[in-house]
Every structure is written in structure tokens, then in C-alpha cells.
Length: 475
Image (tube, rainbow, N blue to C red; front, side, top):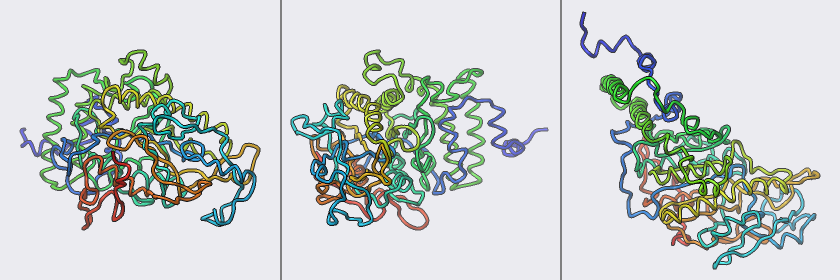
């Protein structure tokens, strides 16, 4: 007996159809979308969602590499020297220096030496000798502020512009505004080795934006490309056979979609299947750093940080729009104790690879239109963490921490903002996270007030109703 095509597809569920086809889709591009029933609670994603788009005005940066030092690096020990703090070593700070009178502990000056580097004379800690070579490329913001000195709201704020609500992340907004230059790779890639950072997948959620704008998570602890991107090869079907199977599935998807207009979840799944198929042609090569010359691999280092930053450069030159790299799972920079040993170890893991990334981008002529961002979700106090142990550390701090940027239209060799003599509060040119996001979008060619998405009866934007472009840091 013959049935019309619409009826013929009814007995099989979508899950059964995918299972019977046995296709080796790149599951890294699909798994997050299939697992999350609320991945795209917004208007339908239009065909060609990821196609390149023109911003509001000519951009200075066309891609972003965000190096997230999760846990909150101590600004006092890295990029914001406070020699006056030595006067308060082991002593209570003066009351007038404490913005929060409940702040406990005694002054703890940095034991790491600072020196001036480059023609700019920028002061950088001895912890970062390789990054210091790029002093004249760095734009250091010493006056960052975030509302809450806790990890999860800090992560959410830095990535999504809100401390609690699940809103689209900055990578998703970037992809929404610009699309991607490479239709065979995800436009937004997140690397975090051996697990997830604090706040987990909320850091790269699309929320109400179409599902195609969600970040693709990669567990970058692995070495081999086939482990980094699982199921990227189909060992059973030839490409032509697989293409025909996918075309058939997509025909059924289209029938399904016609009966369910404005279903953003379905549209996201359709696009993810197409992307997963295309990834089989290019993802394996993009993540395979063995193709790099030995000298390049040695420059980055044969360890997790080195490998994932080298992958970041390879993805950037292949047109991936937004790449976020975490320094391990959880919050490794959360130095409540033993900061004297922890910071040198963390710096050794990141210093040479970050410098190698900047070197590589400059040599390839990419730094001028690649915005590199380094920093965490907050900073650390200038006082010792209570109770004082044999190996002291620093507590959380949100008013006056440091983030630096390089390339992509920022002013190199420039320091913006000033904290007080002991690094407890901003006294000049404060920069909020909303200001940072507004400036990032400006460098990408957008007026942050006009990059909006209609949802639930209102126009949402990354910066909510806040944010000003920090024009002083623009080249």
C-alpha cells in the first residue's frame, strides 16, 4: 500500500529516524541543542541565520578571542602595582580607605616585583615576562567594576550582562549581529578543559536568541582532533550517501516545520544538522594542531593552555567569529589561600601561550582586526583572607579589578582608570561591565543601543539600558 509522503513519515519519530540513519554527525554541534528543551524560546530563526552580515558601521574588529581567567586574578599582583600598600603590611587599613567598613584582614602587599616595559613604560608584574613583551599592544583597564563579588553572578555578568537572569551571552550577540565567515565551523566556540566553569553552560547560552547562536562547547583537555570533536567521521557511509540521507531527513523536517510555523527550536535543530554535516569536512583539520610546524607548537607549549590557545588561533584564521578560552574548569584563579604559590603556577601556565597567541596574530596580520580580551569575573582584595593561615590568600573584590585588551582597534600601550593607593576602590574613570560590552560591540561595528532583539514584548540588548563606549581606549 502506498501512502502520501506526509503520512509516510508519521510512524517514525524524529529520534527514531536519526537513530536508524546512523549518521556520524559532529555531535559537539548538536548535543547542546538536542539536550536543552528551552534552547531557543524566541522567534523563528530565519534561513541562513549564520550568513555574514554587515554591522551598523565599519568595524575595527571582526572576531573576538576572550581569554577568561576564571576565579578572579589578583590585580595587585599582576597589572595594577600598589607600592603604598607596603606601609600597611600586617596592619589594619585606615578607615577612610575602606569603602566597605566590614572589610576584614590586614594589608598584604604583593611580593612580586613590577617593572616598566615597552616604549609606553607600562608596569607589569614579573609573573608575566612574555606578555610584558607586548606592553605596547596592551590596553589595560585598571578600573573595572562589577556589582557582586561572587563567582556565579560575576561569570553571568561578564558573559551575559546580568547577574542572575538567563540572557544571551556576548558571544551569542556577536554571532547574531555579524553571522560567521565560515559555514563549516561553529561561529562561536567555547573551550574549557576537564569540565565546565562556574555557571556552566549559562556562560554561552543563546537564551531567547535563535539556537544557532549558542556557543559550541569543546572539552579542550584532549589532544586528538577526533576526541575534541566527537563523531566527526562517519566510518560506514560515503559522503554522497550521507548527503542523500541528510537531504531526506531535512525534507521531513521541512514538512514538520510547515505545520509548526515560528518554532525556533525546530529551526535550530534543522540548522544544527546542516552545520554538523558540514563540520565533517573541516572541523577535524581545524582542531588538529599536529599540522602546525614544530616550532609553532613549541612556542605555545605542549600543555592544555598552549594547545587550546593554538586551536583558538587556528579557529580565528578560519573565520570563527567568537572564541572563548577558559583557564581550566571551576575557578582556578580563586586564590583564597596560598596565593604565593598559586599565582606563579597559574602565570606559568598562561604567560607564554598568551604571548605566543599575540605573536602569531601579529605575524599573520590578524591582530589589527582581532580583539583579544584577558581577565576574570572580578579581582582580589588588598588585604589578607580571614582567618589568616600559614599560607595566606586574598578574598573576592569587585570595585577596581583589571582587564586588558589588545588589537581590534584599542589603544596599545595605554592604561585606563586608577584605583586608590591600596587598590580597594576606583578613583578615576570607572568602567562597568556594561561599558566594556558597549565598547566591544562598538569595535565590532555596532551601536550597542541599536543591536536589539524583540522578545516578550520588548526589545532586549546586551547592555540592557546601561553602558557607555569607553572612547578613551579606542585607537
